[in-house]
Amino acid sequence: MAVYTQVSAEALTAFLARYDVGELVSAKGIAEGVENSNYLVDTTRARFILTLYEKRVAAADLPFFFALLDHLAARGNPVPPGIADREGRVIHELEGRPACLIRFLPGVSVSHPTAIQARAAGAAMGRMHGSLADFAPVRPNSLGIESWPGLLAQCGRSLDEIEPGLHARVEAALAEVRAQWPTGLATAAIHADLFPDNVLMLGDEVTGLIDFYFACTDIRAYDLAVMHSAWSFDATGAPLDPSVGHGLVEGYAAAFPLAPEERAALPVLARGACIRFLLTRAWDWLNTPADALVTRKDPLAYRRRLDWYDANPDAFAA
Image (tube, rainbow, N blue to C red; front, side, top):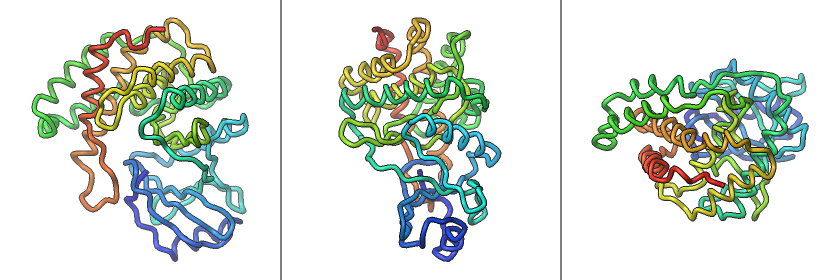
């Protein structure tokens, strides 16, 4: 979440007039994240999230995302579906951007999860995957493995401005991962970005899974690998207690079957996840506008994760 596009009080008041949600009380920009512009909106009736979709999210993909959210919500998953206006429309335009009003979910994101919290989050992903077994729509992963060579080329030698030798490090790792990438694993709709800041918790209970704007169809176990790479380390990329990553994987497996071949593929899938997030973070680091209200994320935190997975190939052993 972030704020790139400013929304005036007058424009927001007119926008909310389309809905039966009460009158505007306050709106505050949310600085976390790097993808879209987000506001916390309070009305006389309730609290909502207003999201304006920036360039990386295509308006044509929004129906897929909201169909997925409706599907999950109907099956009891703690996700925030879009709010329909009086005409039944969820997707609108505001300040020249596609925009949606979204249900607010209670809870906070944990920055240093415990093993118990990680197990609960892994189980929530497992239940989500179970609910998506009969979800028919398909969206290719625009940031899947096929896109990584192009991302590397776009960043180019500017990577070495972030850290000397980073380009060569990523280039070599990408060649290895592409050569080892598994085929034949189950594919399905996945979240593809279930970081701790996209999981809301109250104590040890998961109250919300949010920010589905990278959701796509890809290797299902890759979703778990992405989550492991996000939850098992601190913000700098230093590993947490091994019980956190272990709890995450075992919580998932207890909620949804993890096939032996999927578990065996997790090390290379996790290294791929590191490359994906290192490259997109590097691009944002090099290209984020100076006046954007946004918290840039350190790409080197994922280089450190990549180093750790290289040194710990047995991290996912049962």
